[in-house]
Figure (tube, rainbow, N blue to C red):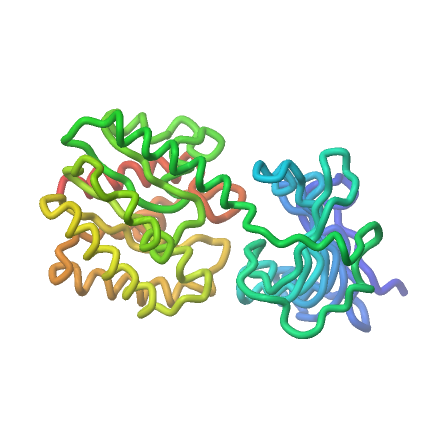
Length: 351
């Protein structure tokens, strides 16, 4: 009797579990077990490695590799003109839904030939620390050698370009205007690939500055705050931060503390501006953070008057809609979700 299962997704080369080999015995639907297998994701990447089946879902946990050759994750990194090829290392769905732990990100030139690699301790594709323990260079995948190691911040150039665009927007704006400070939820709000027809321009007049920067946290804005010194004072400021902070391992109190510091800076720069703070959203990508997000949301709501901010919470709106509000990545809003998000902000700004 065969002890492996091949699923329809493999036969049609579509997203889903391709095959699964349990550690001993035969796979039975509904019965949790560990094993080895392959999963293809909607954006095109393919994971092969250790899998834990919890009786309902197939989760990445253990050692594996994810190939980005056919995924938009593998698009050319502007800063260096190279492509992400593959991540090989540790995965833990309980932490990030995918990559968490020691590993190596491999890159190729545009023609597919090996260019370099970066080792470290990763959370998602973000390197959050050095490789834990001694790294065995003999385990590099075929085509890569020790001298090809190269570590750098591939987002630095992208962020610099984003700030150039933001500062240009400040130069063109005329008070009274609204300033949106936040992460990818704001930056991608003008991208039809995510927002569809519900881009911000549909809901807000053109007299605003969108200072959304993908992946940003309160800690980043504490470093960048000086860039806001001297810009025209906004009538209203909407802040959407905190999600990435929590999902990158910062404690609830730590995130709240960073907010307090940033709020103090904004109050110093713009004493007459009304400040609105959006609560941390619950995205289906990682429900393990819902408890921390709820604690943070309660903390900012309970202290709103003291901090002189107006807090808006839209998780209940998402739940009440009964609709799929998220993009295929299960993190960002889709067209419907951005429509809901914009309507929520419209109502928030009337308070």
